[in-house]
Length: 92
Image (tube, rainbow, N blue to C red):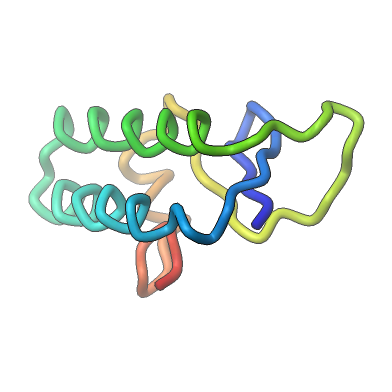
């Protein structure tokens, strides 16, 4: 799957990593629902760091359609809320 982190670029990520990412996504949703800004910020960074660690960056000149788009690290709670689907940021 091709994942884009807004403002950074695209990475290829194996589907086998999505269970781990879904745990972080669930935590992020809980923190957003409770208004825990510090927890939200910490978990968003953990989610993005995990994608960066597990993913393989695509070359800067590659223009592949992204199957998953994640917010930039400095995205606000409201910006992330606008990106959410019923499943959170990560489907499944």
